[in-house]
Length: 120
Image (tube, helix red, strand yellow):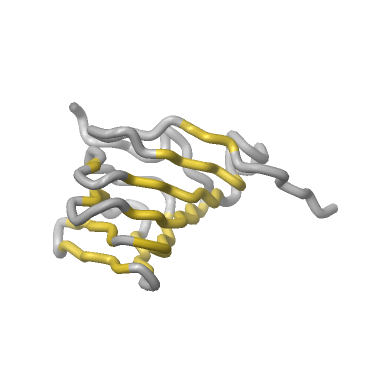
């Protein structure tokens, strides 16, 4: 049966500055563990801890640019571009060049335990 998601649920974000996460589909909003879909709003200068997640992440930048750092390369993902980060690969997201709006899809769904952030 189809399920209408009338509005997203705002969930807590990690990082040095406030970032807004609006989860449309996922463990919090729809009790779905197969995938999550969230719209992110990050301020200029935001950076989150590095992580080695247990999920693949598919990210589409709507406006601004997102910096995606891996052990091998750092990408600057511009509006209209996308990046895929596979599970088990270390990655760190940030917005050093200005604010950014982007959509992240995680398969399976994002979970605080499954993100495996670097120790503080």
